[in-house]
Image (cartoon, rainbow, N blue to C red; front, side):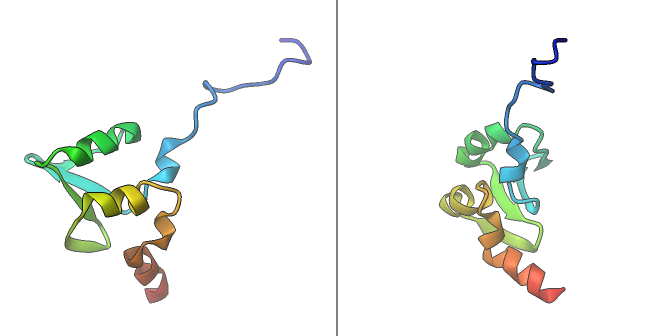
Amino acid sequence: MSQYAPNRTGFGLPNLRRNVCPHFYMTGSRGAIPIQAPHLLKALIRQDANVSRCQLRGGVHMEQGYVNDVCLTPRFNQCVFYEDDLTRE
């Protein structure tokens, strides 16, 4: 490698998981859906059989619009549930 070539790892793609709230998960007919491909989440959310949930509020079913606006964006720390969890500690 030349001294002028940049040292790259991977393909320079962004870490998509950082834009998803760590407390967000989805359940389907077979239970929890693993989030191994965050870029597919928006497609999964549109399916009526899947339910969006928050680990901080066990029984809450979250609306698709809220999930897209808050949970799947870098602003997930502005979520009401997230703020409640931080103030409890």
